[in-house]
Length: 517
Image 1 (spheres, rainbow, N blue to C red):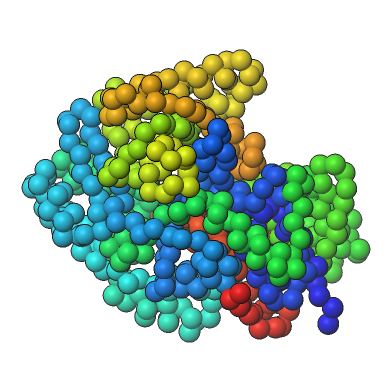
Image 2 (tube, rainbow, N blue to C red):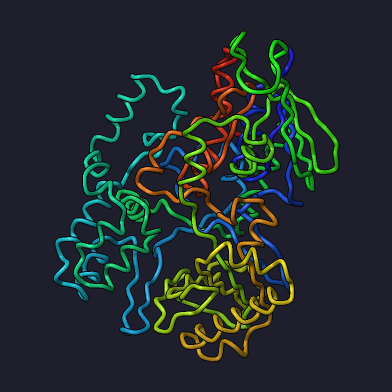
């Protein structure tokens, strides 16, 4: 049987994963990417000899013992990277109260440290640690990742529940609430803030338990060479398997052919046949055809722009109208002639004096020090990166006039540097490079809807929602990425590409196969 051809939109992690597994299973694929390089939001760029990493903060399952590590090996990136064990998740700093605490992989020490400044919350702290211990050794393949929901049999579901029996109670009741809701019962305001900001306040409590469990297991790591070093081996693996990538190729339209026995588009009521995706049209007007089209691009752009909003139902309409997005970020990076030996790689700073950006008062900064690898800066120097959540509309409107847009970036840079100076005296005079990425920057390079770098906000309801990889009324079309597998981050994106090919193999009546290079 002749190989089926496939077009994949987007060379981010989901698109590259889709391409690799497609090639492994006898599909002939071609990726079209808007940007000049692979990775999507897992991006790095050079400025004056410094490497700025705007993508992957940490990696789950970076060494043997987790099924995700086997996936990294299949995609060729585990063999090409050096991962550094994460022993400290981060440090929380309260400027007003002069307090700080480190979240370490030693759960006994963590319990002591938290109880030291909030003994009245001992019960809540014990509950946090118990949840983390319950999640130790958790198999991510048993948490809905081994195969797509479309292919899960009743037996598969029973096996999954049996594998999770030890931790099952932590996915129900109060642990299924949002962290923000759960933290209301914590008496000490500082401890409440720490718990809420271990990830995002809106995620379910069990997600925080899972993070701490992975940390305690030594299954969280940093990328010695940065995000692009993680991505490039996957691109190489894809090309070695025979795949093709075209960069600077923005897809404007997904080409669709209607059922010949109907007029117009969508499901034919006469013959009950769907329309079918047959290719893409690029921004330069060129057209490419294929048997299968997979979009690993932004969900909103795919459904409502490339497909004109023709293949939606009430659930899709409601999702894109009502679900909240991950809040976009401003990221200010400095190249600094200074080393930060012994300092944690990540600090969450509660500001005593909030920053004002647009209509927002910004009361917290996320600070990354790239002091754990010599790959990010020249000898004796460091990349210092501060980020905060912001509003899409403010920056999107501001960029229409470049002069005030650039002026606001400069003002924000100066404000952020002044706040960091209080923590690292002399820092301002040591800055050799500055770089500012706004939500508009994210959109310009990735086309992610409203600059949302991780798609949907993973609330308790959203993160457990099963989203079909197909659209109603459209055949030969599939979606991969964070818009169909909520939660964001590396594992869902990579697994989503694998899932699409598993579905295709099932549809085409052949076994799914994967190999390690």
